[in-house]
Each structure stands twice: as C-alpha cells, then as structure tokens.
Amino acid sequence: MSLTFRLLAASALSLTMALTAAAPAAAQDAATIERAERIRDAAMAENIALDYVTQLTTRFGARPAGSKAEQDASAWAADYMRAHGFRNVRIEQFPLVGWERGEESVAIVGARPQRLVAAALGHSPGTNGVIEAEVVRFESLEALNAAPAGSLAGKIAYVDAGQLIATNSGAGYGPLTRIRGAGPGAAADKGAVAFVMRSVGSDEHRMAHTGTTRYVDGVVPLPGFALSAPDADQLSRLIDMGETVRLSLSSTAHTYETTSQNVIGDIPGASRPEEIIVLGSHMDSWDLGTGAIDDGAGGAITLAAARAIAESGRRPARTIRVVLYGSEEVAQPTDTGNGGGAYLRGVGPAVEKHIIAGESDFGADRIYALGLPPGAQNSDFARAATRVLYPIGVLPSPQPELHGGADIGPLAAAGVPVFGLNQDGTRYFDLHHTADDTLDKIDPEQLSQNVAAWAGLVYLIADSDVDFRAMRPAEAASH
Image (tube, rainbow, N blue to C red; front, side, top):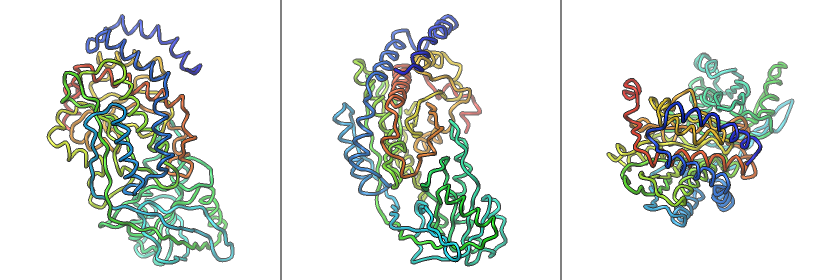
C-alpha cells in the first residue's frame, strides 16, 4: 500500500467515527460492512486483475470489433470465467459491420513536401487510389457547417479545433469527438473529397489517435484521417504562413460483414439470485495498440472484483453478473446499440430485475469518487459505502450518476439505476486510441485500488436489500 493510501487510511478513523455516530447504516449491518472491508483489503493486497489483462493483451493483441482477434479473445475469456468460478457463462453473438484499416499514408506535396503521421478514422472508406487536393482549414465543426454549399468541391476539409485539455474527468473529450463523428458528413455536404482533423488526444507525441466516425444513410461518406498533434501543428503553421497546402491521401481501409459478441458470466446470489447487478466493460479495442487501458483494464477490474467477492467465503444475496461487451468502439448504421443493445434485447423483460449497473471504461488509474443513482447520495447506503471506500481514497461525488457509459447506457435508458466509480483520467487521453495503449502503461498498484473499490462497493450492494429504483426522485424516474 502506497504512502498516499496509508495516510488516507490513517485519516479515515475520525471520519468513520463521525459517520457511525451521526447515523448507523441501517441498510447494511455492521457484519456486512466489516466483510466488505475485508474483501476490499484482500483485493488491495493481491493483484488478481493484472493476470487477466496481461494474458488478454499478450495472447490476442489488438481486438478490433468483429475481428478474429476479438472473437478468439471472447472465447478465451469465457473459459477464463469458468476456470475462476463463474456460472452460467455464455457467449451472445450479434451481427456487425467490421472494418479493417489496411495501409494508409498522408503527406504534404508540392513545394514543401513532408510525410505526416496520421491514422484513418474507424469505418472510414478507403481512398480508391490516391487523393491529392488543396486543404481548406476550419477552426471548428460549426465553421465547417457554415461554409457555403459547394465551396469545398474538389478540396480536403481540415478541422483543427485545438488540443484536448487534460482533466481528471475527461470533460473535454465529448465536444471534440463531435468533430470526428460528424466531420466527414459535414465535409461531404460542402463538396469535399476527404476530411482531415487534429487527433482527439491530450498528448504531444507524434502518434495519431483513431476512433469511430458516423454513418450517414448507412455509409461513412468520405475518407477521414486524424493527424498527430505535432503534424496538425505543422499543417496549421504552413497555412498561417500563407502557403497553399496540398495533401496526398491514400488508404485501403474497407468494411465487411461479421459478428461480434458479449461474454457473460455470473456469481449467483445465495438467496435472491434473480436480482442482478451488472458489472460492464468492453472486449474490443482499436487496432493501433493492444487495448490495455481501453478496455482490457476494465474487464480485468470487474472480473477481479467479482472473483474477490466469490472467494471471500460468503456468497452475497444477489447475483453479480460480469459482461464483457463486444463492439463498444464502433457506430453501426442500424443503430443497434452494439453489445449494450444486444444484451438488453437478450434479457428482455428480466431487465426489471436488474437492480443496478456500473461500467469500468476509463483506464486503470485510481478511483477518486463514487457517484450513486439519484436519491441514493445521502442515504444510509451512501454512508456505509463511504465508510468502506474512504480509506482507499474514494470520496462521495456531489453529482449523481445518471447515464453510465456506452455499454450500460441501454440499461440506463431502460430504467436500470447506474453507479460510477470515477477514475483519474488525467493521462487517459494521452494513450487512448493510440499505439501507446499497451500493458506497460498500467500501474499495478492503481489497478489493485480499482479492484478494491469495486469489490467493496459491489459486495455492499449485493448483500443488501436496497432498492435503488425506489430511491429515484419522481423527476429522475420519469426520464
């Protein structure tokens, strides 16, 4: 245990005493809280998550959605679950449009020839040879949308909205991914022959960040590329110097029909097995790295947390279900919700017995806050959770958790309450969707803290009779 965690543990005594004096946690008796603390401490002491993510990323490497690597990794993960005490393990297949990157190149041509580091955007079509055209720069998606109709005929649209600012919450990511998703369609509407953008990342490394773009009428309308940050700077400087810049683009990317799958396994509840707690992450990854932080780590964390509870010597009342979702990284033309949608369709009316869901999909750095569903934040359960999580540095979030992540989003939309164990994402977008998303970027100590937080919290939920649906305020329950 690090010095930080030891100091937090030492300082937790006064908070724990105050919480105990102020309001005993009626929803959790003292014995349940003590067991949760023991499970938490055992998880901190043993790094059982590292084994899974090491094997996954080493055996299978990158796992693009629908690829043989994703399919083989899913079959292996199902066997891994069975070998570690999970029951009712199954693989749930669904159709998918897969994508292969092929070969790609981007270069400035003409009077100032230079090779650039770039990556095709996910599901972007190939160039069918070489595209060579003049670049027109825009500072935002809105500026591109405001360009006159036909003004980009025969040209390449380039959006440089500036670097993503690193924060622990990752708040800057969403606005920039709008460019990646909608940019090719917007460029096509103005007559452009291709689309280029600055990578959605917070690093200054000469590595491009890939990521999915959006279908328009069933297809991605234009070849799209993301430039590494230094190359985006280089291109923008040349334009600022008054140069007329021409780019040469080539890509052999293509799509194909395939299947993806969810891997599902249960730790059955002892007395109320029909009541389900879902712990989610995703199996697929982008193809540039090996998908260690996005999202091999999430699978490792949720599997290890469930194992820690199962191996504690006492089964909780409710069933803990781990779902390794397929194809989280892509947007499909049929809007099926990918793995999350397939899971929801598969459970059907039984979704009413899903009492809560949580998702781990933000790397492996430490958890610093717990977000509970609306109505639960100031409850006896919240006070019990604080007693268990504060000693390892996890504080109550002032904001309720409403939506979950991409994988459990369909469950949340169907009325299942969601919780969030918020991770420090300060360096996440340095690595995300790049060749640097590899196993060595995982800090084993922080990974163990994640498992400890998940295991302690989930045990409290699983061995309680708390009805999170009933806690929701009327306005939250109506959405």
